Length: 274
Image 1: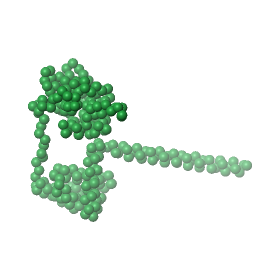
Image 2 (image 1 turned 90 degrees about the vertical axis):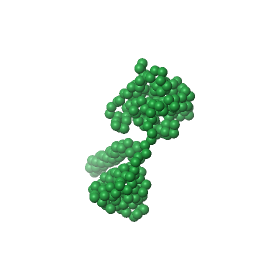
Image 3 (image 1 turned 90 degrees about the horizontal axis):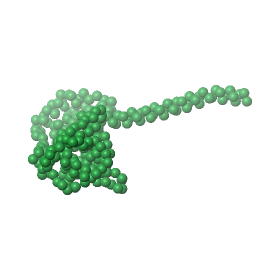
Image 4 (image 1 turned 60 degrees about the vertical axis):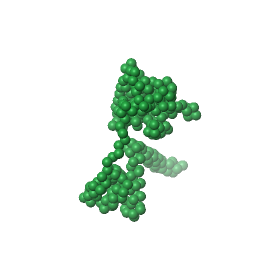
């Protein structure tokens, strides 16, 4: 009996130590997962999409020509620039090279070859051979806006988000989501972010391209233009009369989905085709 008690007292600390080690290992694994999620949030979703596209292009190029993608050398980078010049502009080629640099950094390698004379000479030659003038879309002017005004509910849901960015000098991405299902209450305008005042409206922006981490709030005024057919305040008020919605609903509400139990926003694709 005494021997059993002695053996139990000796094995008890080892059991405690094993349990403690298992607990520490579990905590470390959880910490590693948190680190991965944090690093994934370092870039905006649009930037992550661009990076994936650039990496697919570079890896497919290396796979097709049987080249080593990482770590690369200056000649491979020069060949890749020449390959991209068949379809891309010089500015886009520089963007794709930035993707190659990021791929090397994430793999733990430096990329001094991108600053080599061979790569810079190739880019200079591409710029000289592929002279490119950007084809910019025509500017939206006050003369065009009256042609877009409408009293019908169907067009009002598109006129209101069209007029607001014009007078606020705001980006469409802060007002409309890329898809109705991707509406974000922080990044996109809600009904509760627009405040009615006697002189017009006050619009609260919580996030923007220059304020991606939502570290400040920006309030911009929309002044009422009495008797003017392109008055953004009157346009917004008419839209709200057709589509009354609670404060948490999208600012540019399209309809109410009884099946999902929520209001559906106008999305960016509808706005562009409009």
